[in-house]
Length: 180
Image (cartoon, rainbow, N blue to C red; front, top):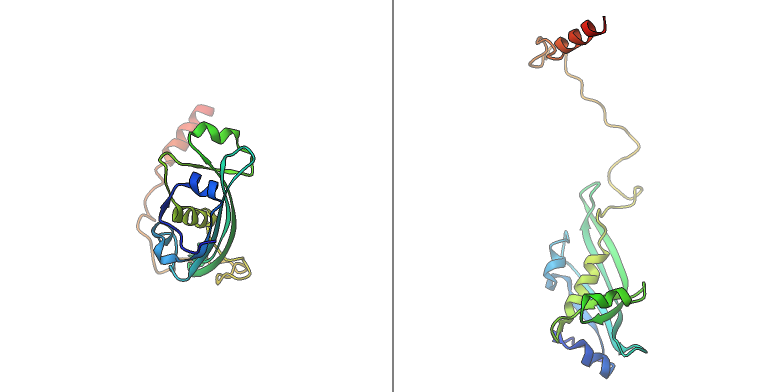
């Protein structure tokens, strides 16, 4: 088992060798993920195991763990999302191969001979982010039980256009003439 993840590697060669990598990476070093985070603090732990399945197809299994600091879309404060996701990937050479994979296996299309391995870690973290991150209702800073009071204008304040006739009043008159 190696803790140093090469930047680029041939997943077919790694699978034939039975290579395994594990380690940690600062979240701030993952540029696509960093854009989605409220605060890029902490690290992601990962383990990637390369092997050949019974059909001699290169496979990758592993896990990625991190605590992501996101912005709650209810109260706009920070919410920590613990991520503990499992990878179950098959390396494919052409998109049509993806149709022949079992449902529980995700394809990784490798057009060239190499794959940027840290992208696998970053992709799993990005995919774990919900479309609308938010606290549970009982943990959110917004009070959902009370209704906001409707703002009523003061009697002294007269809004512009209060003395103007309704422009649709003419249409109401036309409609009543046709019904008679």
